[in-house]
Every structure is written in structure tokens, then in C-alpha cells.
Length: 54
Image (cartoon, rainbow, N blue to C red; front, side, top):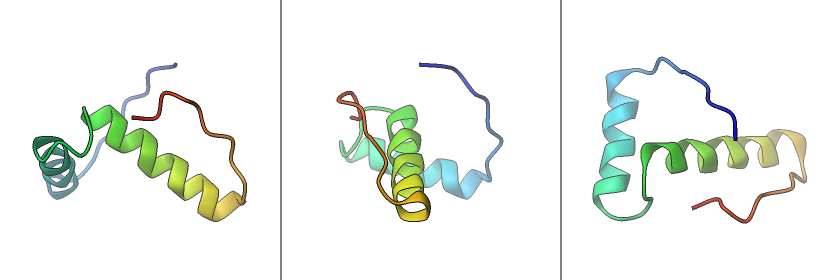
């Protein structure tokens, strides 16, 4: 995987942290990967997903 840096509003970061605290995702990175994957599926149609999504 490649590393990217992203600036985000505090409210979005807090939302990601809540998902991690609830145990829904192991990390902020996992939340971001799933969100981007879902966006690409929605906008581009079929999108091949990796086996290490969560």
C-alpha cells in the first residue's frame, strides 16, 4: 500500500474515531479505505476490492 496525507475537518476525524472505539474498524486507515472503496464503487461501478479491507 502507498501512504497519502489528507487534511480533514475535526468532525470527520471524531466520527472515524467513534467507529474505531466501537470496534467497527481497527483503525482510522481502515475507515478511510472502506469509505474510498465505497465511493469508487458508487461512482465508477464495479471496483475490485482487496482481501485486506478491514
